[in-house]
Length: 399
Image (cartoon, rainbow, N blue to C red; front, side, top):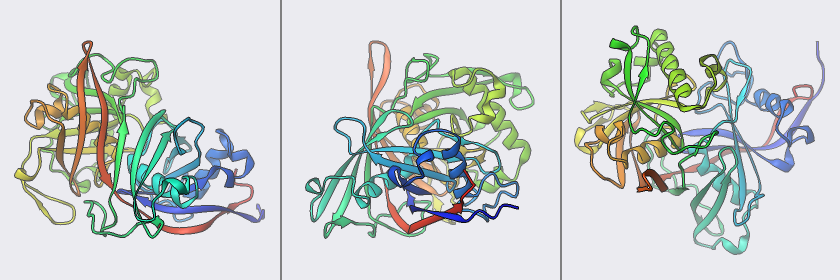
């Protein structure tokens, strides 16, 4: 039996949007974990408490959901003009891997606040009272995020009256701008990797009548597969229990996600999908109707433009992933996508959608250039708060 003493590593536990994660400064990590590789992955798994066959994360900092099984590394930026590099790891709950394939839009908010807390932003650029602009290089996908962080008495303002559905308590509003959020993909290509606004996926007839399923495949914010709720037997009003307790439904969604990932060129064969759980996401959309949120609040059809439900790491998300919200806003801005059609069609620069916890508004500016759709930026508001700071401890032989 191992009796290697524990080591302690400086760390901060933050909520960002509807997610939370363990944040590290790069220079505080053990030397072997300052570079990508097995040591870093093993450390983050041990911090979170994965892989956990019980799916509870009792022996770690994770919360046994996709929203709470996250680690982040912040460092002084290697890129001109930017303040920090932000690297995000999605730690699998019961499987032995860490997924580095995409960003977490919610924790982008916390990354901005942490950058100031940790001293990475030049104090000369931060007002005593006002708004500090934090320029983030999202290292997973090579994109720029501009965060507008409120400052009071020279420090990050964390408390306030901004309410975010999916978060229990109000906090201070942080506005995020995702610049040029369309991802050209690993093999090049456009925001729509197949060149089409609506594709037809070949799917098992056991999942889709006729074996054909319409889908919008988009690389914006995070690679996402959008399908119509009606085409797969849903209304778009579903809450977590309606899907996460249905093993057959979850398996079906994973099958469709793998089919879409292959079509998008993100995997070479269907069997590769289990090792790429973080991306792409799969979501289903529907025109607005009244429904009751997970908090018991009635969301009126008149309050939203459409309904969206999205899955993350194999389960229906309790609210909406920030990066998926960027994908929703971008797809809604392009006439003819399934998201745009569910919202009523036509041109739009913003959309408010209903999700399991309530509603969210996201703006996007899209335009057609040389026959291809591009998006200059997407904008949304979130909040962030430090929950705990100090040291996280792991056994010395954990990595």
